[in-house]
Length: 245
Image 1 (tube, rainbow, N blue to C red):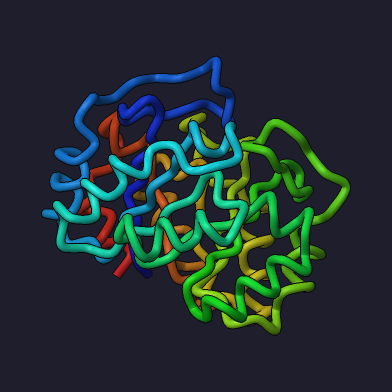
Image 2 (image 1 turned 60 degrees about the vertical axis):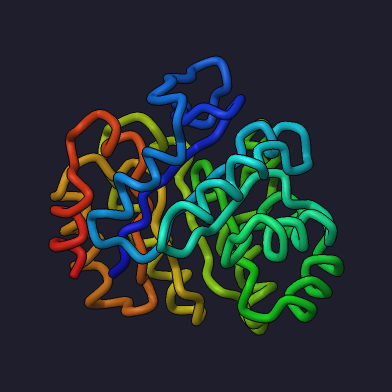
């Protein structure tokens, strides 16, 4: 399994939110590029970048910082937040140096467009499913829909997508671990054929171990995003990489 350290960008700073709440923000640094270099030195293959301003505005906002990160580190970068039209996809892939882009809200609200973009950019789009109680949340986690995570994924199982990122927003940023129900959701998604990346709640090496063990039953559960735990120091990237492998 791969470890993907998360760098969440807001106002050019490296921050973390609790449960996606913009009013519960902790700033962990004003130099995201240096943070990215630090994680890259520990043997990772991908960085997970989130444009929090973009998620709220519905368009890329921190793409300048994203480009600086992509140019500074020798690892692949994926980016989510505010990617809701073709121009934004091209901006990220062609101008900002990211290897793949994550689309969540627009995949739920405009299935025809998402299919068109997946065809135009084969293997470059990641379906981002953020869920609370297994139901899809959108608009930067501000709204919860009436669509189940599994139901949304099933609609797109035939597409050539790079991956599917599944985030339980009830766990995200709370430092409370990954619950079994979320792991079972991820295994079910992996069974649809997606490369599934786990996100939300990874707090200790025991969480990494649980996900690695879940991977034995569902090999397509292939990645783990870690955010706040890295900044709080409850997990070191190098240790997580070893445990995941």
